[in-house]
Length: 151
Image (cartoon, rainbow, N blue to C red):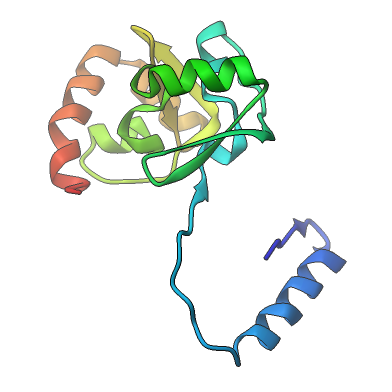
């Protein structure tokens, strides 16, 4: 179901989706393979070149419980060959929050690559606080992460 919100209200897509959800609610629930789109559909490999670029759904791969979009077959294949190099640290959660021992969603438009590793932040203020001590915040995040995200 796709819900698109605009500043002044719901779109037809949202209303149709909500209606479909109500109709579908009377059906039996079926558990299945349900993957979330990782980093809002951005191409994880694009950050290494200094720009965040949206991926295309037809160039996709699965990794760590998510579906990842890429700009091309070539960038998808780069990711498949070494997902640890391209996937954001802390499973895409905010690196500042991880350094402070809690979880907050990462924003794929607020990021930094350090030592070839991608770190997302929840908002620009978190980015600025994180930048005050990058090595220290990375170390604290690495220490805190197993405790705040134990699986």
